[in-house]
Image 1 (cartoon, rainbow, N blue to C red):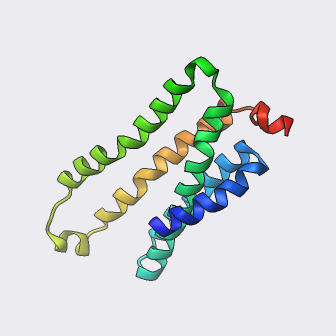
Image 2 (image 1 turned 90 degrees about the vertical axis):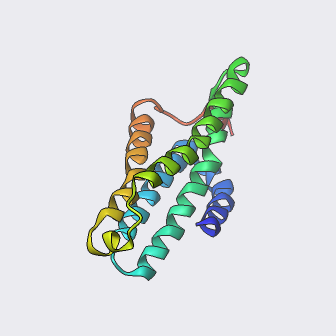
Image 3 (image 1 turned 30 degrees about the horizontal axis):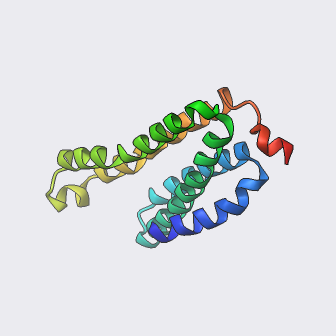
Length: 147
């Protein structure tokens, strides 16, 4: 996934010039495709899905700060970047709490489909991002429209 994030950040730096809203939507849709690939029971398709999800995460992490920077008033810029970074930092405790809820017996995962529920969790974040993009983000940033 780290390699995918690297490719996503590199590609996102170029793709963000096509439009901030388009880049937000593309990262969510690429993430949905990756989650669908990770639902397949083939290990190679699963690994491909992990790589593609890393690309989507890298793409989103390159457009998110740019959009915040261009749309927020200067006096609130540091507050919004703090909120953005804090939201990303909350990832770790939630993953650690979810790890405590998972049974440690490997036969449970071999005989059930419980592992799929944890892969589907990012879908809820993608839905929130889609709703926010369609309902709140009506147009691209003024800086993009000027350029």
